[in-house]
Image 1 (cartoon, rainbow, N blue to C red):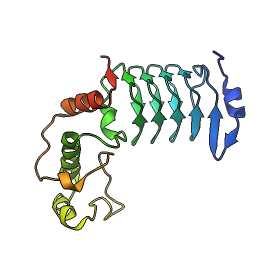
Image 2 (cartoon, one colour):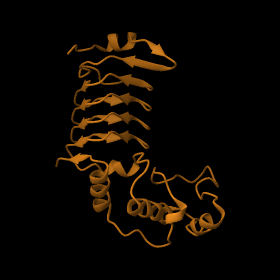
Image 3 (tube, helix red, strand yellow):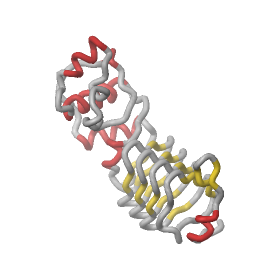
Length: 191
């Protein structure tokens, strides 16, 4: 596999605002720009730092301490070394594996999850909202409590379903929720 230099990375073509990076070994490069797209099976070394909106092909492997920007997207079978961190809204393909306990999964873009996890995540969103009563209003009006203001940050990113809403406190610990999400998404935790 070709090992790329920072200079070579800088020379890769940009198409429609996205830097196209072929499959290769990027372990000598420590900083990548935003909107980079990497080929299938690419490898990244310890301490790599990638900008937001980066996307990665299947079976990409990321070394210990790698850091990824917001809304990064990872293909199926990607693996992550211990101490890796992920920006808000990142998404992971089926069969991804984590060599650490991935607390940052709670800020990942989970899309659709089971009814049980959807209700748990909606309750957590309500629990962390400054006006949790707006979730009961949402059931009646369809007006999302997070669309009211640009000053309220959403805790979790998933496809909510009003038909499942039942007021109440979250029932799962963070640990149990992380394990349940990883199991449902077929993500492996190795710690």
